[in-house]
Length: 365
Ligand SMILES: NC(=O)c1ccc[n+]([C@@H]2O[C@H](COP(=O)([O-])OP(=O)(O)OC[C@H]3O[C@@H](n4cnc5c(N)ncnc54)[C@H](OP(=O)(O)O)[C@@H]3O)[C@@H](O)[C@H]2O)c1
Image (cartoon, rainbow, N blue to C red; front, side, top):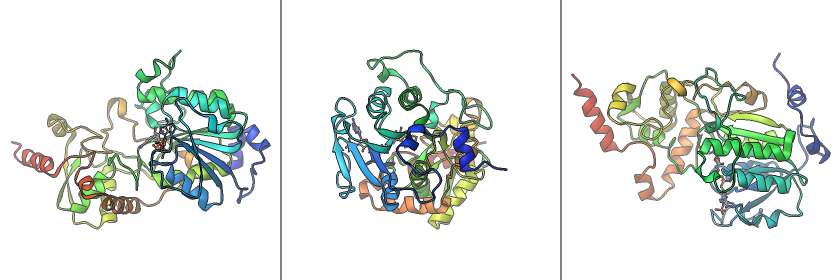
């Protein structure tokens, strides 16, 4: 029998002081939460704030007041700086905090230490990059992560991203203990993403014709729609989950071929896919993930990169919208951007480079 949320709460040790703050563990319509979002105005934040407001929760944003300042005029906004000014958070109480904006461990140390006695649950947005070994099948959310024996604020800038985030996770846990909620997303995709790593595919497939498809059709792929993640965050907080979770999908294994076909379905295109093998692409200097976004050959230390066991996340309520919907909505978002931005994607290859690769591909032997 699959575990219920209540079993899960018992085994994962529900947040003691969250309960004392009065959160209702058993109700399907929880009381109005006071939610503090550190950040909230760039890519992932707004997709958390919208479902929180839609479900009647009270949201406060804390940031420097620089990014997308026109968003959420109805919401309380506190201005400060995670580097050296958290004074706006002093003397305030919230049920939960969502920390999106931190990579540096010292940022998490400062905010978590300041808030530990006035906030119930600390949700830290971490990353799949914390894993020090991605070679296992399946990958386990409790697998080994990067760690460092000691660090100072002066040297944290020289840590790589995965180590920074893993160290930041520890800071959240050091302050909040069993009231810490760590979410590790893989690639976050969808409307508002400015990295274009997913966006490349709906745009390219929508253009139609013969599309360069990377590597082997059965190579696995995983990602998370930013809206699925944001809605799930609010669910996790309403239901008082704590512990560590992956934010990845989908719920049935997806191959790169299935991925491209799902994108094609969403963007209504006549595209055909021509698969160029990994060896050929590597010989031509085509890099996984950047030149061919989302594509990670499942070999060596990346064998398990797209093979996470997501059972714990599903049991905690993670749901997914269909891939064609994500593809269509991302394309629609892309077409709202200025023309010069549409013409210059930040990931993927240009049409000229793709044509050159086709020419080389067909002229082999
Ligand atoms: N994109 C991915 O595929 C991916 C994958 C895995 C994990 N992640 C994680 O997801 C998170 C991405 O978050 P996001 O940028 O989209 O979050 P967000 O909450 O939407 O926006 C970042 C916020 O941080 C604020 N901020 C930046 N510097 C600040 C400072 N010094 N003091 C106070 N506030 C500051 C910005 O506002 P102001 O500029 O106004 O201060 C902005 O509101 C990161 O933690 C990243 O590691 C991303």
